[in-house]
Image (tube, rainbow, N blue to C red):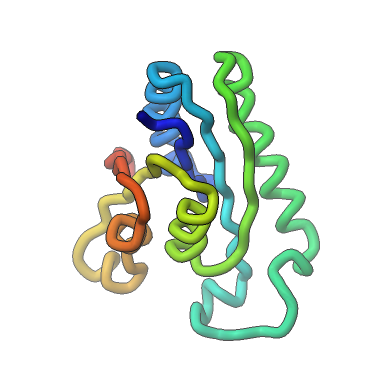
Length: 147
């Protein structure tokens, strides 16, 4: 049923809460998990609509840090014998997730939601909500605890 499961990770413990659910599904359905890390440039944090020449990959160390992070997180998958791969992208986070899911024929996206509300949600937006609206496949949202 779920052959390819996508788990977007932002480097936080809250995002990693989704990984345990993806692992359980992968073991049950003998699925492949893709751990996705999206690199956000410091410029995107300040002005998300700012267009710069060049790519995030040119910012020293960001891609290497992302790869090291994914290698660390994937250790548990390896130990459990779960088939996995890693991917690193850059760009607007919701678009990168849904575009990757579409291009790679992902069957399920498993991700955490921070559960922000009120002004915090208005200021930051909701990546989970945007992914849910644009995803080409089912999305399992895990409400992460500990804000």
